Length: 421
Image (cartoon, rainbow, N blue to C red):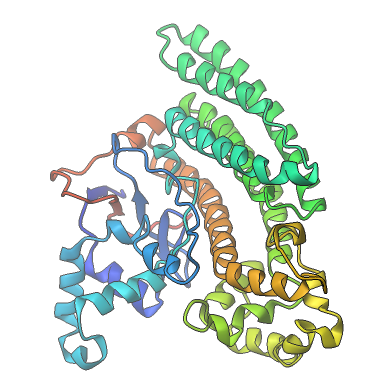
């Protein structure tokens, strides 16, 4: 029988596995890279303050540095890091210091400056958390509205009030003592979440067609709608239905995220490897994006895909080609109306502005990939619950026996043996 241990201290063996590539993180799970057996879950502790989503920095040069301490990295126990460093004493020349180890952790956990609107585990994503996230998205859209109104691009924020009302209804449902009333009220909320899914899927499609800078906000809202619906079924202990809803949502969300990322990669993705950005974006990070689209790709293959693009980039960004790359840029990166030019136009100025924004745009792509991986990991979480024979409430109430260390943002759930699903 598989038993679970909950702790705030990441085991040195798992940390080593993440570093050497034998383990991989997908959303809120860590699993064997080959067998796909789950060896650990990551979860935000209960009753922790709800962190606001990380917004993209205004300074593209210092921004990546300021965001390096991400949700996951901030939760890595220094005790675990010290154990790993102790085991790697023979490699001290290569490892050096704790700081270097933390830097490597940034890479193996694949959460550099990327943030996600979704929690690492579905059990931590209660209705209050979802409501907080929804309010953050609405505020971001309100700010975008100020810019988009200048080009007569109207944003419909009206349905956010209906979404909030549905979340309030769901929250009320699961505080009721009568099982019948609880179920009836929950089903009413579910119907409203289904309506939200259809509406926001349509909004996403419209904004993708316009190549708009707010497509990602609607994508994230769509993710929250599916999460809220599935959470209702989990509260009712309807695992099969919750899993089915996550599977359907995953297909719809992934396909739209893929379209959005292809949009942000621009007509010449080699722009992200421009020498101007060498201290901010490297081939490894670009490869991670391509591997999400096609897992069979490696760095060498991605470089070959970009070899001709690299050769053509300077020409496509200059007057020689009529600023071909600039002319094809989507509004999601930069709107030509935002950039002041000269009597000769603003193509050169738009190119310069776009290049400044690419590091931030890249973080958006990483964030969307992270969001998709967390959403897909929710399915594995539910499958694991069914296999372990646990109720959702038992799973949600797991807590560490030791007290939570200061500034510790994560706890780790460890099965007594790797779990095959």
